[in-house]
Length: 376
Image (cartoon, rainbow, N blue to C red; front, side, top):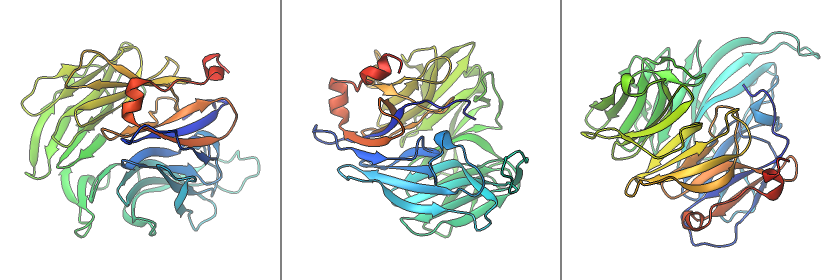
């Protein structure tokens, strides 16, 4: 939960592999995304807003959710779906989110809040659900459980999800939505092509958001485990992980205030990448490029997005110096060429989507505006 709001204008930034050109801005108005942003395609970011734009995803009774997208060159964000519980006193919160092409997947937790003008009445838990939609079509519910928020990952027509009632399962959304069990459960799910990754039997780690357990990489085409990384190789627990289409996995772990990012693959030894070891939340890997988000020690304020190319991993290259996010939550996504993140601007309470090329950022990293650098 976020303890305080950042009193600043926010900008949702999307980078896609395209010729360098003047940035195209899309004005947004809903504060921090409740979930996402996610790159559904190289030129399109998708995210979930609170319906009435409450900051940092804080929600009150019956406000609902809105799924929005913005495409490179577009002048406005597009509203894809509104999620409003028919019971006016039930609050729907986004716990996890995925987008791929025209498909959307959403893990939601529903809470009942009695009508109370002073909002002093305790909320009570209802259930959690996994829902999917095709394009702008309505969401349909695939699974409902009476405990714990679901985790999920989506790639094309394959959905990987974890919840206590089903365990860890994979569904082929173009072939009947039938759940195929993979494990009793798992945390920090990731999916790319034929490979899925998760933390096996996760238990609390040394950091508030880390979990301890073996990292399992599973080959969905073979229906068998490809390899695993023992928990002992990740001291302090896993902060975040991601997998790319050839099965390589990037894992961020933290112990005693030191963060490190390691990459493994089938038949490969773990490699430690040259990211800073102070604070790092969030890691993405695609096309042998790894992006991580470095933050200050309190979890607030300006952050850097850093790139390490596995083909020349001598150092981490700064892509952006203006990224911000919620406490202990990385607000970015990366697909190998495109990058989307949230950034701090000078004016108040506005969001803007900007588009540039990765090539341009490697030549000249994005910088925070002067007011942000002065601490305003």
